Amino acid sequence: MSEQTIALVTGANKGIGYEIAVGLGALGWSVGVGAREEERREAAVEKLRAAGVDAFGVPLDVTDDASVAAAAGLIEERAGRLDVLVNNAGVTGGMPQEPTRVDPATVRTAVETNVIGVIRVTNAMLPLLRRSAAPRIVNMSSSVGSLARQSTSTDELGTGPISAAYAPSKTFLNAVTVQYARELRDTNILINAGCPGFCATDLNGFRGVRTPEQGAAIAIRLATLPDDGPTGGFFEDAGVVPW
Image (cartoon, rainbow, N blue to C red; front, top):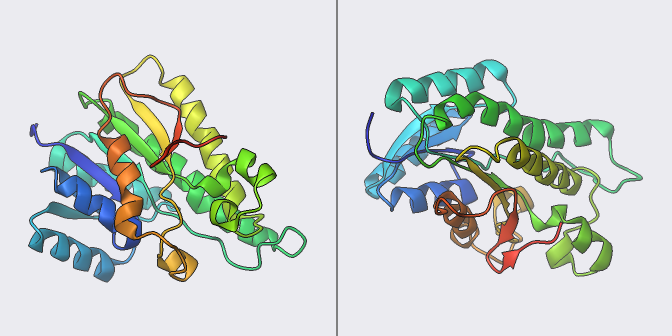
């Protein structure tokens, strides 16, 4: 197997995911660009390669069992293992999101991608990650999933708008991350949740105050943790995010 570090970033054809791929590629890593839409995926791969990144496309719909299984097979055939998985793909679920107005289907959509999708991809990639000397899993969460901040702050930059779908899906993701860390504590796999901050992406209509490149920094940090680094934590650039 190659000594080159192999990473997979889901939702990597644009926004924060793309910038995560850029940052990991700058380390000399081989980066799989996971994305559903072929045209956007291949355009991202071409752009990354033009920038000197060893990038390859991975057809991947995190909500589809067969797609995820095929992605794992592609990476196994290409590299024989996976060193870093960044679960970045995410959706808001739709509008409205106020608890008194939200359609249960909106909640279901958010959870299907933001939580169940992460579980589906992680479990499919775990056999490949177990072959790595220093496996890392990064779940891209959000501080809007912090119950502490939601219940004590009125600053929408930190809490986001009132949400019964997107924000709770990130709280759910944080809880799942902790459970993975508990199960994997006797292995060399480190798994953490990271908050990119309020970045201007198409997810929020480009209303954010940070760039996607800034948002990618926490994922790159967690993807490159030393062997004695934390696991089961929730982090942003400034440090630990309260649960």
